[in-house]
Amino acid sequence: MAKSKRMYKQTSEGMSHRVFDDMIDLASTLFRNRKAAGADRLRSLADATRDYAASMTDLPTLQRQAHLASENIGNFAEYVLNTDIKHMVSDVTVLAKRRPLLTLGVAAAAGLAVTHLATTSSQPSSYKTRGQRTKKSKQKSKQPSAVARRTMNGSAHAHT
Image (tube, rainbow, N blue to C red; front, side):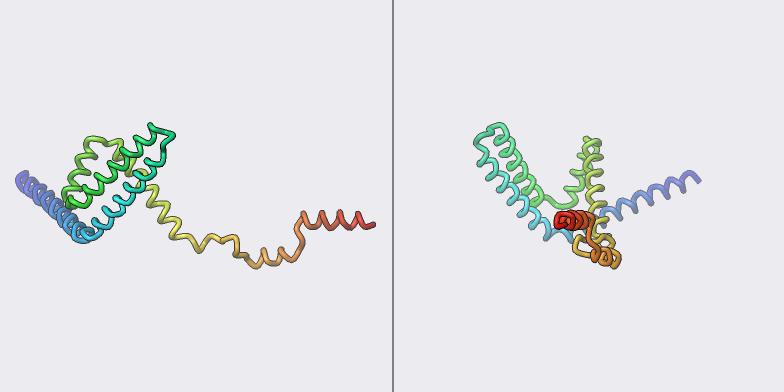
């Protein structure tokens, strides 16, 4: 009985690894052409950061930091372009094991961003914009506002 449980555990672990590997293979085929576009965007961000750093002549410390940031962004662009998805996932796994707090922070930020995007994209019709009015507000708009009534009353008293 213990042998059959061990066999089941080994086969279920093997299947989960195969499923994960298959998902990575699928993702790599889907994102292969997107990698080049992402690397190009990262390169343009690095160029823009480099240009910005060159314009900061009054703040030399900040200028050095911006140059360093532009170099790191450029290196990351090369990494994205020249690394396959499986290796990237492996690198992320190693990073997550070495720096769990950083991983938690990135996961929390990503979760907040996704939640924000999901809630704003799912509720635009329930919120009214400034230009839209309901029937009630249109009916109220026929009556003068409190400020308008005060000015009318004030002007009426001034004419008498």
